[in-house]
Length: 273
Ligand SMILES: Nc1ncnc2c1ncn2[C@@H]1O[C@H](COP(=O)(O)OP(=O)(O)O)[C@@H](O)[C@H]1O
Ligand SMILES: Cc1ncc(COP(=O)(O)O)c(N)n1
Image (cartoon, rainbow, N blue to C red; front, top):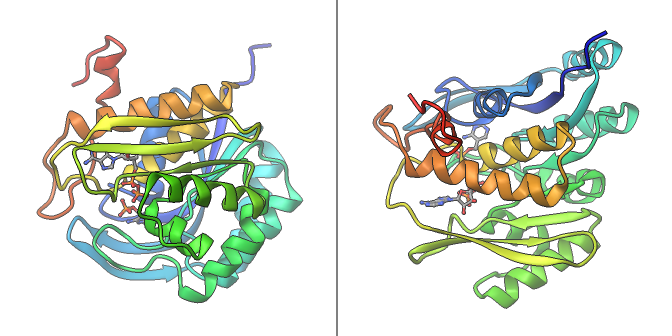
């Protein structure tokens, strides 16, 4: 019998524009040679200019998607993205407690790059209190870290403090992403469960085409974890992968354009197309 092929799960919202959400997850997981599966939580009508509409799916079909996957596939790592509102967050929490889909990466998506809310205000506390304690790793950007910790984060010391607070809230490992900072470097802070910490720095790319950066980073980490990589290796690869997709950009749409999900092939010495 051949070995079971690595399988990962994205629990997220659909971005019809193809740049973020579940679509970014699928492209990233595929590029990392992992089989991608999905639980669709909400549908957005979205493009690079913004989110025109959003429709959360009924709980029943969310439960059924989880049950279908659990009955057949051997998922080794999973991630969450857009979860819409308290009903959907609780549905996802319930299913993650019921089934074992391996290490969980929580990308606490709240607001799209264009400013549209992807998580209702009353769901933020539910994410903090009920989903974070299940997270192997949580990957907030700076505004998300501020909301989840009730802190103003303006200095590297405050970033570190916020990461400790997120660990106290139950997430085992933390990345606080620096994409929303000013300055010519984009620095992400990593705090691991054993207390090891480090910064991942990259020269900031002067571009508006950063739609889906957070999804891409968290999906890449999830794919690497599904292959059995260590968490630190998965995080470092995730950073290198997302950096390549921003740096070697493509032009699609008229607003906050998507990433080049093929770009890392060049870094690996393959045809980056
Ligand atoms: N202009 C940029 N140049 C280089 N790296 C960036 C840029 N914007 C974001 N990143 C990186 O992309 C990743 C996602 O970060 P961020 O944009 O803060 O997340 P989100 O999409 O959740 O808002 C991080 O590793 C961040 O450092
Ligand atoms: C369905 C969905 N999920 C997530 C994002 C966040 O991506 P970004 O912050 O890059 O706009 C999004 N725009 N749409």
